[in-house]
Length: 203
Image 1: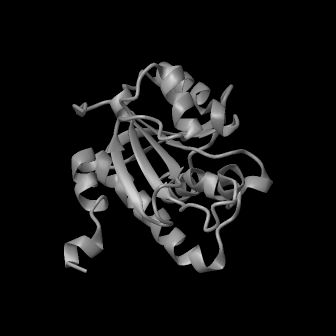
Image 2: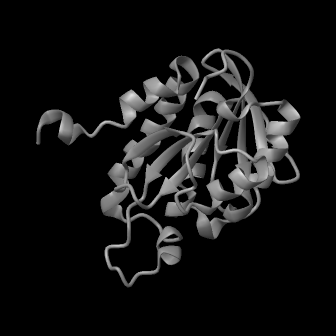
């Protein structure tokens, strides 16, 4: 994926709106974006759009539009399409943060493009924008410990106290990864965050 050298970024956290979903696995994208906004969106006012809440700010020397879709997860593409069109943001300057059940809890993966991996919010973005060429920051939420546990119920469950440390590290790591993408590009972010520490140490 060729990285544009200028223009605004669109930073999207995926989740479901409503108190019942706060702190759930499916809402880890919102959690990361909330943390990012605390650090870089101070003083910026959220604006209500047709399909999202968004704020405009700057970070790492670039203009950034941060987006919290106000639709349910499977309609997230409506928000992304609307903002990308209004601000004329190229697909490869869109960063989407979302949960991934195929990664262990707390593990991060940065990926430029690709399929939806079964994540309905990502699928909606691909369908509504007509492209898969946007950057993803995947945050691992793990699979159900019991195979009889429905995945749909699992992603709507809250993290356990035993997972709290891994989740906190993942949120901070994802915020750092966003900065690396903005400043040095997606390849550098992949180099930093996609490595397996155990493999690197020979364990």
